Amino acid sequence: MSPRIALTIAGSDPSGGAGIQADLKTFSALGVYGTAVITALTAQNTRAVTGVRPVDVDFVVEQLETLVADVRIDAIKIGMLGTAELVRAVTDFLDRHPCPTVVLDPVMVATSGDSLLAADSLDALRNALPRASLVTPNLAEAAMLLGQPVAEDIPTMHQQARALATLGAPRVLVKGGHLTDAAVDVLYEDGRTVELTAQRIATPNTHGTGCSLSSAIAAIHTRQPDWHETVSTAKHWLTAAIRAADHLDVGTGHGPVHHFHQWWQ
Image (cartoon, rainbow, N blue to C red; front, side, top):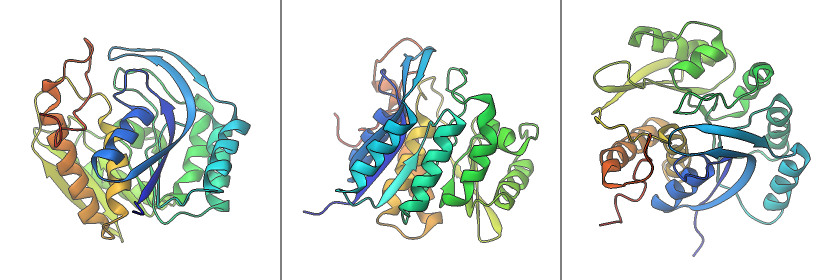
């Protein structure tokens, strides 16, 4: 058996709902073998992030180089990087080791509202956009990358998706969050934008949705070459994971989505 292999480059979440823990669960749920390089340790639960400790940049690079010297990587999902130095180091790694699928989730703020990106890292993150196959910011992240106000309607989401493409991102998925009654995301590819809509699920248990969606896209794209179809399938899977989230009783804040809703009874 030679499985598809995906790599997550991201921070650790001890509560298991986001970060590399969510990514590895997502990869497994979608039939892809998961590998991981840790960029930061966090102290967090379903209610708050109380501490962040970046991993030494040289050791992150050592993790990456040691891994790819031995293991074939079919897709990379990039999550929390935290510092400008680490963003540049990962960018350099991608230049040395091109990968056919790179999904960049520009993690800046946790579901709890806690900041996960140093203030001086924005320019480095903007410079990394051209290395990604797809960039998946939420509304706040898209606005921060562009230096614009947060979108308050869907036409502005379209505009910001196109604007991010002018910074070098070949494809952009602007995630609508709770902007409308439906869960509407805007995908930019090949000069045009399209809306992807799913049912909005009324639940507070949405911890890790951004991490899980981007890792689902990376996993699915190892088998599905069409990006629109890939994103649509990932969004459908995540909607089901959110719908089943209330079956899990984990923590007292924003609980995790149910990554294994297809398998657990």
